Image (cartoon, rainbow over all chains, first blue to last red; front, side, top):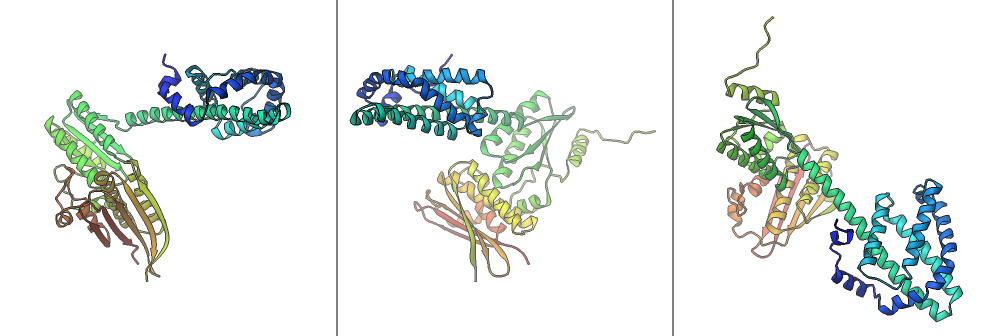
Length: 303
Length: 137
Protein backbone atom coordinates (compact mmCIF):
# COMPACT_ATOMS: atom_id res chain seq x y z
CA UNK A 1 0.00 0.00 0.00
CA UNK A 2 1.25 3.45 -0.83
CA UNK A 3 1.86 5.59 2.18
CA UNK A 4 0.31 8.99 2.63
CA UNK A 5 3.73 10.51 2.17
CA UNK A 6 4.32 8.94 -1.25
CA UNK A 7 0.78 9.79 -2.33
CA UNK A 8 1.57 13.41 -1.60
CA UNK A 9 4.83 13.13 -3.49
CA UNK A 10 6.78 14.04 -0.38
CA UNK A 11 10.29 12.80 -1.12
CA UNK A 12 13.82 13.42 0.14
CA UNK A 13 14.07 16.57 -1.98
CA UNK A 14 10.85 18.00 -0.63
CA UNK A 15 12.07 17.20 2.87
CA UNK A 16 15.34 19.04 2.27
CA UNK A 17 13.70 22.13 0.82
CA UNK A 18 11.07 22.29 3.52
CA UNK A 19 13.56 21.81 6.30
CA UNK A 20 15.68 24.54 4.75
CA UNK A 21 12.72 26.91 4.60
CA UNK A 22 11.70 26.18 8.18
CA UNK A 23 15.35 26.54 9.11
CA UNK A 24 15.51 23.19 10.89
CA UNK A 25 19.22 22.56 11.35
CA UNK A 26 20.86 19.47 12.79
CA UNK A 27 21.76 21.63 15.80
CA UNK A 28 18.06 22.23 16.41
CA UNK A 29 17.39 18.51 16.43
CA UNK A 30 20.35 17.82 18.70
CA UNK A 31 19.16 20.54 21.08
CA UNK A 32 15.68 19.04 21.16
CA UNK A 33 17.14 15.61 21.94
CA UNK A 34 18.98 17.18 24.88
CA UNK A 35 15.71 18.67 26.11
CA UNK A 36 14.06 15.26 26.16
CA UNK A 37 14.65 14.86 29.85
CA UNK A 38 12.87 18.11 30.63
CA UNK A 39 10.09 17.08 28.27
CA UNK A 40 9.66 13.75 30.05
CA UNK A 41 9.47 15.52 33.38
CA UNK A 42 6.64 17.73 32.23
CA UNK A 43 4.94 15.40 29.80
CA UNK A 44 2.06 14.52 32.06
CA UNK A 45 1.24 17.93 33.49
CA UNK A 46 1.40 19.49 30.00
CA UNK A 47 -0.87 16.77 28.68
CA UNK A 48 -3.40 17.24 31.49
CA UNK A 49 -3.47 21.01 31.07
CA UNK A 50 -3.79 20.62 27.31
CA UNK A 51 -6.87 18.41 27.54
CA UNK A 52 -8.43 20.53 30.26
CA UNK A 53 -8.23 23.35 27.75
CA UNK A 54 -9.69 21.29 24.89
CA UNK A 55 -12.48 19.91 27.05
CA UNK A 56 -13.49 23.33 28.34
CA UNK A 57 -14.49 24.50 24.85
CA UNK A 58 -17.61 23.06 23.22
CA UNK A 59 -16.01 23.30 19.74
CA UNK A 60 -13.28 20.86 20.69
CA UNK A 61 -15.03 18.98 23.51
CA UNK A 62 -17.36 17.26 21.05
CA UNK A 63 -14.44 15.33 19.58
CA UNK A 64 -13.92 13.55 22.89
CA UNK A 65 -17.27 11.96 23.70
CA UNK A 66 -16.22 9.45 26.38
CA UNK A 67 -13.47 8.55 28.81
CA UNK A 68 -12.10 5.76 26.64
CA UNK A 69 -11.55 8.23 23.80
CA UNK A 70 -9.89 10.69 26.13
CA UNK A 71 -7.52 8.03 27.46
CA UNK A 72 -6.65 6.97 23.94
CA UNK A 73 -5.95 10.47 22.64
CA UNK A 74 -3.91 11.32 25.73
CA UNK A 75 -1.70 8.36 25.04
CA UNK A 76 -1.31 9.40 21.39
CA UNK A 77 -0.64 12.93 22.47
CA UNK A 78 2.20 11.77 24.75
CA UNK A 79 3.72 9.93 21.79
CA UNK A 80 3.40 12.99 19.64
CA UNK A 81 4.93 15.17 22.33
CA UNK A 82 7.94 12.92 22.82
CA UNK A 83 8.36 12.75 19.05
CA UNK A 84 9.33 16.40 19.16
CA UNK A 85 12.31 15.58 21.36
CA UNK A 86 13.74 12.59 19.55
CA UNK A 87 16.19 14.63 17.57
CA UNK A 88 15.00 13.46 14.20
CA UNK A 89 13.23 14.94 11.22
CA UNK A 90 13.39 12.39 8.44
CA UNK A 91 10.92 10.82 6.01
CA UNK A 92 9.62 8.44 8.64
CA UNK A 93 8.97 11.38 10.91
CA UNK A 94 7.13 13.10 8.04
CA UNK A 95 4.94 10.04 7.47
CA UNK A 96 4.04 9.99 11.15
CA UNK A 97 3.15 13.70 11.18
CA UNK A 98 1.09 13.42 8.00
CA UNK A 99 -0.90 10.62 9.60
CA UNK A 100 -1.57 12.86 12.58
CA UNK A 101 -2.99 15.50 10.22
CA UNK A 102 -5.04 12.94 8.29
CA UNK A 103 -6.47 11.53 11.53
CA UNK A 104 -7.68 14.97 12.56
CA UNK A 105 -9.19 15.55 9.15
CA UNK A 106 -10.99 12.20 9.38
CA UNK A 107 -12.70 13.02 12.64
CA UNK A 108 -13.75 16.31 11.09
CA UNK A 109 -11.71 18.65 13.26
CA UNK A 110 -11.20 21.71 11.11
CA UNK A 111 -7.75 23.32 10.89
CA UNK A 112 -8.78 26.33 12.96
CA UNK A 113 -9.23 24.22 16.11
CA UNK A 114 -6.19 22.19 15.27
CA UNK A 115 -4.04 25.31 14.97
CA UNK A 116 -5.69 26.82 18.03
CA UNK A 117 -4.76 23.73 20.04
CA UNK A 118 -1.15 24.10 18.94
CA UNK A 119 -1.18 27.61 20.31
CA UNK A 120 -1.95 26.17 23.74
CA UNK A 121 0.88 23.69 23.37
CA UNK A 122 3.40 26.34 22.44
CA UNK A 123 2.36 28.54 25.30
CA UNK A 124 2.80 25.65 27.74
CA UNK A 125 6.23 24.85 26.35
CA UNK A 126 7.29 28.47 26.55
CA UNK A 127 6.21 28.51 30.17
CA UNK A 128 8.24 25.40 31.12
CA UNK A 129 11.29 26.48 29.12
CA UNK A 130 11.46 29.93 30.67
CA UNK A 131 10.89 28.62 34.19
CA UNK A 132 13.35 25.75 34.12
CA UNK A 133 16.14 26.78 31.77
CA UNK A 134 18.66 29.60 31.93
CA UNK A 135 17.42 32.60 29.93
CA UNK A 136 19.45 32.17 26.72
CA UNK A 137 19.05 28.39 26.65
CA UNK A 138 15.30 28.59 27.13
CA UNK A 139 14.90 31.01 24.26
CA UNK A 140 17.03 28.97 21.86
CA UNK A 141 15.32 25.74 22.88
CA UNK A 142 11.93 27.30 22.36
CA UNK A 143 12.97 28.50 18.92
CA UNK A 144 13.98 24.95 17.96
CA UNK A 145 10.73 23.46 19.15
CA UNK A 146 8.81 26.22 17.38
CA UNK A 147 10.49 25.33 14.10
CA UNK A 148 9.60 21.67 14.41
CA UNK A 149 6.01 22.37 15.46
CA UNK A 150 5.48 24.76 12.55
CA UNK A 151 6.93 22.08 10.29
CA UNK A 152 4.44 19.58 11.77
CA UNK A 153 1.61 22.02 11.20
CA UNK A 154 2.58 22.48 7.56
CA UNK A 155 2.42 18.70 7.13
CA UNK A 156 -0.96 18.50 8.84
CA UNK A 157 -2.33 21.20 6.54
CA UNK A 158 -0.94 19.26 3.55
CA UNK A 159 -2.80 16.19 4.77
CA UNK A 160 -6.01 18.16 5.22
CA UNK A 161 -5.82 19.62 1.72
CA UNK A 162 -4.96 16.27 0.14
CA UNK A 163 -7.91 14.61 1.85
CA UNK A 164 -10.26 17.35 0.69
CA UNK A 165 -8.99 17.16 -2.88
CA UNK A 166 -9.48 13.42 -2.89
CA UNK A 167 -13.06 13.83 -1.71
CA UNK A 168 -13.65 16.47 -4.34
CA UNK A 169 -12.20 14.24 -7.04
CA UNK A 170 -14.44 11.35 -6.00
CA UNK A 171 -17.50 13.60 -6.07
CA UNK A 172 -16.60 14.98 -9.47
CA UNK A 173 -16.21 11.49 -10.87
CA UNK A 174 -19.59 10.55 -9.42
CA UNK A 175 -21.24 13.63 -10.86
CA UNK A 176 -19.66 13.07 -14.27
CA UNK A 177 -21.10 9.61 -14.34
CA UNK A 178 -24.53 10.87 -13.32
CA UNK A 179 -24.45 13.80 -15.71
CA UNK A 180 -25.08 11.81 -18.89
CA UNK A 181 -27.96 9.54 -18.03
CA UNK A 182 -28.98 8.03 -21.33
CA UNK A 183 -32.48 6.59 -21.02
CA UNK A 184 -34.03 4.07 -23.33
CA UNK A 185 -37.48 5.42 -24.14
CA UNK A 186 -38.43 2.62 -26.43
CA UNK A 187 -36.78 0.19 -28.76
CA UNK A 188 -34.34 2.24 -30.88
CA UNK A 189 -35.20 5.54 -29.19
CA UNK A 190 -32.85 7.00 -26.59
CA UNK A 191 -33.23 10.10 -24.47
CA UNK A 192 -30.54 12.25 -22.89
CA UNK A 193 -31.82 14.91 -20.52
CA UNK A 194 -29.02 17.45 -20.10
CA UNK A 195 -28.95 19.35 -16.84
CA UNK A 196 -26.52 22.05 -15.74
CA UNK A 197 -23.62 23.85 -17.33
CA UNK A 198 -21.87 22.21 -20.26
CA UNK A 199 -18.14 22.76 -20.18
CA UNK A 200 -15.72 21.35 -22.71
CA UNK A 201 -14.95 18.25 -20.66
CA UNK A 202 -18.62 17.47 -20.18
CA UNK A 203 -19.43 18.10 -23.84
CA UNK A 204 -16.81 15.58 -24.84
CA UNK A 205 -18.15 13.07 -22.37
CA UNK A 206 -21.70 13.59 -23.63
CA UNK A 207 -20.55 12.92 -27.17
CA UNK A 208 -18.73 9.73 -26.21
CA UNK A 209 -21.45 8.32 -23.97
CA UNK A 210 -24.14 9.03 -26.51
CA UNK A 211 -22.19 7.44 -29.36
CA UNK A 212 -21.49 4.30 -27.35
CA UNK A 213 -25.08 3.94 -26.26
CA UNK A 214 -26.49 4.52 -29.75
CA UNK A 215 -24.32 1.75 -31.13
CA UNK A 216 -24.99 -0.54 -28.17
CA UNK A 217 -28.76 -0.13 -28.37
CA UNK A 218 -28.83 0.03 -32.18
CA UNK A 219 -30.80 3.22 -31.71
CA UNK A 220 -32.19 5.19 -34.63
CA UNK A 221 -33.25 8.31 -32.78
CA UNK A 222 -31.53 10.22 -30.03
CA UNK A 223 -33.59 12.83 -28.20
CA UNK A 224 -31.53 15.46 -26.40
CA UNK A 225 -33.55 17.50 -23.95
CA UNK A 226 -31.93 20.79 -22.96
CA UNK A 227 -34.64 22.14 -20.68
CA UNK A 228 -32.20 21.92 -17.77
CA UNK A 229 -29.33 23.73 -19.47
CA UNK A 230 -29.14 27.26 -18.06
CA UNK A 231 -27.47 28.98 -21.02
CA UNK A 232 -27.26 28.00 -24.65
CA UNK A 233 -24.42 30.06 -26.07
CA UNK A 234 -22.56 29.47 -29.34
CA UNK A 235 -20.25 26.94 -27.69
CA UNK A 236 -23.12 24.82 -26.39
CA UNK A 237 -24.86 25.09 -29.77
CA UNK A 238 -21.62 24.05 -31.45
CA UNK A 239 -21.33 20.98 -29.18
CA UNK A 240 -24.91 20.01 -29.92
CA UNK A 241 -24.37 20.26 -33.65
CA UNK A 242 -21.16 18.26 -33.50
CA UNK A 243 -22.94 15.59 -31.49
CA UNK A 244 -25.69 15.55 -34.12
CA UNK A 245 -23.15 15.14 -36.89
CA UNK A 246 -21.48 12.26 -35.04
CA UNK A 247 -24.90 10.65 -34.51
CA UNK A 248 -25.57 10.83 -38.22
CA UNK A 249 -22.29 9.00 -38.90
CA UNK A 250 -23.51 6.04 -36.87
CA UNK A 251 -26.93 6.13 -38.48
CA UNK A 252 -29.04 7.87 -35.85
CA UNK A 253 -31.00 11.08 -36.01
CA UNK A 254 -31.03 13.67 -33.26
CA UNK A 255 -34.05 15.55 -32.00
CA UNK A 256 -33.52 18.53 -29.75
CA UNK A 257 -36.24 19.30 -27.23
CA UNK A 258 -36.80 21.51 -24.21
CA UNK A 259 -36.10 24.79 -25.94
CA UNK A 260 -37.57 27.62 -23.92
CA UNK A 261 -38.82 30.88 -25.41
CA UNK A 262 -35.78 32.73 -24.07
CA UNK A 263 -33.33 30.21 -25.48
CA UNK A 264 -35.08 30.30 -28.88
CA UNK A 265 -34.82 34.06 -29.02
CA UNK A 266 -31.20 34.09 -27.87
CA UNK A 267 -30.16 31.50 -30.44
CA UNK A 268 -31.75 33.56 -33.22
CA UNK A 269 -30.08 36.75 -32.01
CA UNK A 270 -26.75 34.97 -31.85
CA UNK A 271 -27.30 33.94 -35.46
CA UNK A 272 -26.75 30.25 -34.81
CA UNK A 273 -28.34 27.96 -37.38
CA UNK A 274 -29.42 24.71 -35.77
CA UNK A 275 -31.70 23.61 -38.58
CA UNK A 276 -29.55 20.47 -39.01
CA UNK A 277 -31.70 18.82 -36.35
CA UNK A 278 -35.41 18.90 -35.65
CA UNK A 279 -36.09 21.05 -32.61
CA UNK A 280 -39.17 21.14 -30.42
CA UNK A 281 -40.29 22.94 -27.31
CA UNK A 282 -41.62 19.93 -25.43
CA UNK A 283 -40.04 16.59 -24.71
CA UNK A 284 -43.37 14.89 -25.29
CA UNK A 285 -43.51 16.23 -28.85
CA UNK A 286 -39.98 14.95 -29.31
CA UNK A 287 -40.97 11.45 -28.32
CA UNK A 288 -43.95 11.54 -30.67
CA UNK A 289 -41.76 12.74 -33.52
CA UNK A 290 -39.22 10.00 -32.78
CA UNK A 291 -41.95 7.38 -32.92
CA UNK A 292 -43.31 8.71 -36.18
CA UNK A 293 -39.80 8.62 -37.66
CA UNK A 294 -39.82 4.91 -36.92
CA UNK A 295 -43.31 4.53 -38.37
CA UNK A 296 -44.99 4.16 -34.99
CA UNK A 297 -47.43 6.26 -33.05
CA UNK A 298 -49.08 6.56 -29.68
CA UNK A 299 -52.79 5.78 -29.80
CA UNK A 300 -55.51 5.75 -27.23
CA UNK A 301 -56.45 2.30 -26.08
CA UNK A 302 -59.76 1.37 -27.66
CA UNK A 303 -62.38 0.39 -25.14
CA UNK B 1 -26.12 60.87 -16.51
CA UNK B 2 -25.08 57.30 -16.01
CA UNK B 3 -23.70 56.36 -12.62
CA UNK B 4 -22.21 53.17 -11.27
CA UNK B 5 -24.07 51.93 -8.22
CA UNK B 6 -21.98 48.88 -7.37
CA UNK B 7 -19.33 46.86 -9.04
CA UNK B 8 -17.80 43.39 -8.77
CA UNK B 9 -14.70 41.87 -10.23
CA UNK B 10 -14.58 38.22 -11.15
CA UNK B 11 -11.25 36.71 -12.21
CA UNK B 12 -11.34 34.31 -15.14
CA UNK B 13 -8.54 31.86 -14.56
CA UNK B 14 -10.20 28.52 -15.18
CA UNK B 15 -13.03 27.19 -17.31
CA UNK B 16 -15.24 26.96 -14.21
CA UNK B 17 -14.94 30.72 -13.77
CA UNK B 18 -17.07 31.19 -16.89
CA UNK B 19 -19.93 29.71 -14.92
CA UNK B 20 -19.26 32.10 -12.03
CA UNK B 21 -19.34 35.15 -14.33
CA UNK B 22 -22.51 33.94 -15.94
CA UNK B 23 -24.19 33.21 -12.61
CA UNK B 24 -23.33 36.63 -11.30
CA UNK B 25 -24.78 38.23 -14.46
CA UNK B 26 -27.94 36.19 -14.26
CA UNK B 27 -28.49 36.77 -10.53
CA UNK B 28 -27.96 40.50 -10.89
CA UNK B 29 -30.26 40.77 -13.90
CA UNK B 30 -32.99 38.87 -12.10
CA UNK B 31 -32.63 40.84 -8.88
CA UNK B 32 -32.75 44.15 -10.70
CA UNK B 33 -35.96 43.34 -12.54
CA UNK B 34 -34.73 42.48 -16.03
CA UNK B 35 -37.37 40.46 -17.88
CA UNK B 36 -36.68 36.82 -18.71
CA UNK B 37 -35.59 37.56 -22.30
CA UNK B 38 -33.22 40.34 -21.30
CA UNK B 39 -31.77 38.22 -18.50
CA UNK B 40 -31.20 35.31 -20.90
CA UNK B 41 -29.58 37.63 -23.44
CA UNK B 42 -27.22 39.15 -20.87
CA UNK B 43 -26.34 35.77 -19.38
CA UNK B 44 -25.58 34.35 -22.81
CA UNK B 45 -23.50 37.38 -23.76
CA UNK B 46 -21.56 37.04 -20.49
CA UNK B 47 -20.99 33.37 -21.23
CA UNK B 48 -19.67 34.08 -24.74
CA UNK B 49 -17.30 36.83 -23.72
CA UNK B 50 -16.02 35.11 -20.60
CA UNK B 51 -15.31 32.02 -22.66
CA UNK B 52 -13.44 34.10 -25.23
CA UNK B 53 -11.22 35.44 -22.45
CA UNK B 54 -10.47 31.92 -21.31
CA UNK B 55 -10.09 30.26 -24.72
CA UNK B 56 -8.15 32.96 -26.56
CA UNK B 57 -6.18 34.63 -23.79
CA UNK B 58 -5.94 31.86 -21.19
CA UNK B 59 -7.48 34.14 -18.59
CA UNK B 60 -8.32 37.66 -17.57
CA UNK B 61 -11.15 39.20 -15.66
CA UNK B 62 -14.73 40.38 -15.84
CA UNK B 63 -15.93 43.56 -14.19
CA UNK B 64 -19.64 43.69 -13.56
CA UNK B 65 -21.26 47.03 -12.77
CA UNK B 66 -24.74 47.97 -11.80
CA UNK B 67 -25.65 51.27 -13.48
CA UNK B 68 -28.43 53.77 -13.19
CA UNK B 69 -29.39 56.71 -15.42
CA UNK B 70 -31.90 57.94 -12.88
CA UNK B 71 -34.75 55.97 -14.42
CA UNK B 72 -33.57 52.58 -15.46
CA UNK B 73 -31.10 50.02 -14.17
CA UNK B 74 -28.31 48.88 -16.42
CA UNK B 75 -25.67 46.21 -16.19
CA UNK B 76 -22.29 46.88 -17.72
CA UNK B 77 -19.86 44.04 -18.14
CA UNK B 78 -16.25 44.61 -19.06
CA UNK B 79 -14.07 41.70 -20.16
CA UNK B 80 -10.38 42.34 -20.06
CA UNK B 81 -7.53 40.10 -21.09
CA UNK B 82 -3.89 40.44 -21.95
CA UNK B 83 -3.99 37.80 -24.64
CA UNK B 84 -2.84 37.97 -28.28
CA UNK B 85 -5.58 40.43 -29.28
CA UNK B 86 -7.57 40.25 -32.50
CA UNK B 87 -5.89 40.84 -35.85
CA UNK B 88 -8.88 41.11 -38.15
CA UNK B 89 -11.48 42.91 -36.05
CA UNK B 90 -13.82 43.55 -39.01
CA UNK B 91 -14.14 39.88 -39.82
CA UNK B 92 -14.73 38.94 -36.20
CA UNK B 93 -17.47 41.56 -35.90
CA UNK B 94 -19.07 40.30 -39.11
CA UNK B 95 -19.23 36.74 -37.82
CA UNK B 96 -18.49 33.35 -39.28
CA UNK B 97 -14.78 33.66 -38.65
CA UNK B 98 -13.05 31.54 -36.07
CA UNK B 99 -9.52 30.71 -35.02
CA UNK B 100 -10.70 28.20 -32.46
CA UNK B 101 -12.55 25.84 -34.83
CA UNK B 102 -15.95 26.82 -33.52
CA UNK B 103 -18.93 28.60 -35.00
CA UNK B 104 -17.25 32.00 -35.07
CA UNK B 105 -20.44 33.69 -34.01
CA UNK B 106 -19.52 34.53 -30.44
CA UNK B 107 -18.58 38.18 -30.90
CA UNK B 108 -20.92 39.07 -33.74
CA UNK B 109 -23.81 37.27 -32.06
CA UNK B 110 -23.16 38.82 -28.68
CA UNK B 111 -23.32 42.26 -30.24
CA UNK B 112 -26.96 41.62 -31.13
CA UNK B 113 -27.83 40.51 -27.60
CA UNK B 114 -27.01 43.81 -25.92
CA UNK B 115 -27.72 47.50 -26.35
CA UNK B 116 -24.17 48.78 -26.16
CA UNK B 117 -21.08 47.01 -27.38
CA UNK B 118 -17.52 48.21 -27.54
CA UNK B 119 -14.48 46.22 -28.60
CA UNK B 120 -10.94 47.46 -28.24
CA UNK B 121 -8.07 45.32 -29.30
CA UNK B 122 -4.76 45.28 -31.07
CA UNK B 123 -2.46 42.39 -31.97
CA UNK B 124 -0.34 41.63 -28.92
CA UNK B 125 -2.09 44.22 -26.81
CA UNK B 126 -4.95 42.21 -25.33
CA UNK B 127 -8.67 42.72 -25.75
CA UNK B 128 -11.26 44.73 -23.88
CA UNK B 129 -14.96 44.24 -24.55
CA UNK B 130 -17.64 46.33 -22.86
CA UNK B 131 -21.33 45.50 -23.07
CA UNK B 132 -24.32 47.22 -21.49
CA UNK B 133 -27.87 46.03 -21.15
CA UNK B 134 -30.68 48.17 -19.71
CA UNK B 135 -34.00 47.29 -18.15
CA UNK B 136 -37.00 48.21 -20.27
CA UNK B 137 -39.45 50.74 -18.94
